[in-house]
Length: 207
Image (tube, rainbow, N blue to C red; front, side, top):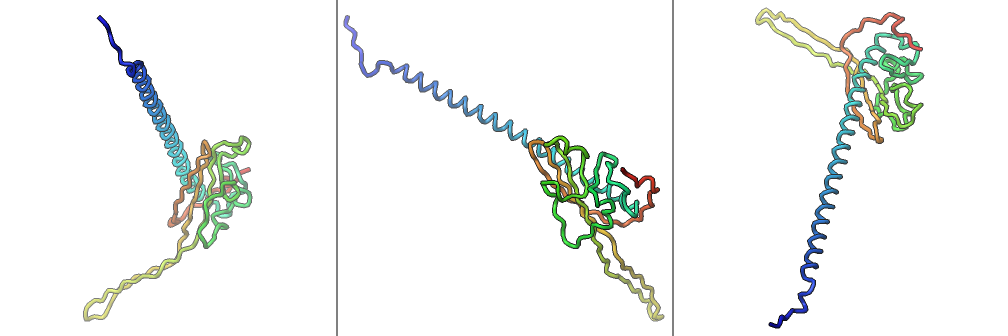
């Protein structure tokens, strides 16, 4: 019995096998690339959150520092480091009183030149170390007078109350420079409404 072969079908299965291999390879490469991309996104998100929380915590440190500075009346007698390894920039020992710009202050500069405090105090000895810079500025806000008059009928008598004055409002702006050169800035406002008892002079002394 004679057998006949179609010449055009020679190697047909091999071609399909190669095409299938190429498709599977492309799908595998695409899956790996997607996985790597998602891993990087998750890592970047984690870094961003860490940097944000560090900056947000910096505003709390700045507020505690401001309250301490106010109670020292004439300011700190040195630049620190203070509690929490916070370093005051020389010339800013009495920042609660001397920082009174009437215009909006900018965030601390990336080159560390525009700040009132920073921490950790020794980060400059290790370039690239994450650190936090902060600025604090206070402005006086006037309170408009207010009154209430109450008439007592035909007697024509009345009682009145009124109030006016001023209060201090502080902007606390903090920037944290974290790992992989990540940066996040946070701003908060603090209104001084309570009177602070002065600290003993010894509690305001820092080397």
